[in-house]
Image (tube, rainbow, N blue to C red; front, top):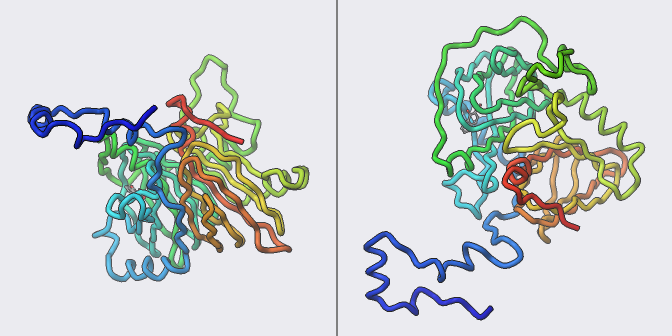
Length: 347
Ligand code: 1HN
């Protein structure tokens, strides 16, 4: 098709006339709204290095008492999307949250869904709907939309975790709000990863007619994920990606409605291509160091760094170490794209 008309080709009187009636000619905007073959992406491939961000986060601990912060979080903002919009990708909010010994981040619930991935420190915990989830490095803890949650710290030294929320999407829908609550009554029992859903393939017995809990498993301990990846790596052919998906153990499907989670192991010295897909993503380095090439941009990463991956991007990952594995955690909006009916995996 030949080039579409620009707005300037329309008579000024016509433009002013429609503008006064809150009408907008679509045709000059058509290509911007609906580009050919591949989306226009403002999201940049970027890295946030933990060693750079950590001092600022610890400083925030001195500058701002928790009572004044509610949540002490530094947002990882993608410059391509405008820093003020606090988006790592168009749908994903990422923050680094600090909690100091004895502090509590008060109970609330809200419309965005969140997960935490612990970066450092011991003794932190999150209570989700009465379930106390211990937080150790690499643990994934879900805080689905609408569930009460509060954080605490019973150990020594700083505890830091990565927050991932579907906040940008919920804001776009003009649907974000939170309700504050009294501290929760905590059930005195181990979290479900240690009790009801101790082992993959086993779930509490119930007749199939009985409805299954919507969010059965809220904590995925890293020690178990790491062990599972290591076992999988032994039988995975070279060149193939060693990867596990975090799923709802009752359904085998995505554990949350918008964001999906997976863990990748890079074997010593390994370089792999991640299947290109239509979702935007964030990669977080749990362990190891190496290089990521995202749409031709090479970014070297170390432990606890976080990277943004635009939609449709080509991703290559390399483990720089020849003796030790690297582990990465991926957050993406594939569950949402699947629901919308346009999720694609290419190649
Ligand atoms: C939130 O509620 C938490 O509960 C963390 O820890 C980060 C970022 C934006 C909006 C709400 C939390 C958040 C957040």
